[in-house]
Length: 316
Image (cartoon, rainbow, N blue to C red):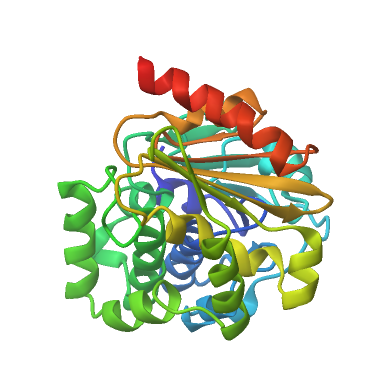
């Protein structure tokens, strides 16, 4: 069943993404939202998502996002960029279990492919936003929808430098530009800029960086006391791992920071190591080159464990 066919049978739609939403999560959610608003005016559509960076407010519909599902029944629920109900944010799992029809649009390799009534999961795709675009009628995609999906692709490709970036990815971007997408403003204002406080804490994380495994790994972490001292939230730290991975000669970047009483483990690799497998050891997951997990252990305890797994992966 196509997306348009699903929408033609629905009068109410709810859209959800994952906890601690990133650019692709919000981009895919609002890309779908704008597509529905533009082409199916009779549908009551709502997007539910946890807090996201203020810079994403340049997307049309960002001011309409609701923080938590309120329990009202819906005909059709979408789960975007999310590989499990446990990772669903804004109390969305409750809605997905009661909606008349559900659809999962994702690109995580850890996705079991059976979460919803329909599951469009492409692990080889750069982003959920890319998967979404090629499920839609491109002739009906507006500038607003294009802006949203472009932001999603930009963030999940690391501004087009991650290995999942493909010809199809760039074909989508070319289509968005043809539709008038604000490509320069979006990439500059949401990817290449950060708040003053986020800049300071990123500087501290870089100052604390250490190398391991003969320079193949760079790692750093931030403590709760340091977060309090710099008056930052986990949202301010979401891009730090991509900053420290810039150290030349490294294959893997590791960054840990406090989230909800635990430490979030962020992993990035350049060419060889499948960090999705490493994150899986700690109950997490993601992609081959970008993955994450959570731990109750202090960074000084868990980092040696991660390094041991990376060392084994480098040998193989």
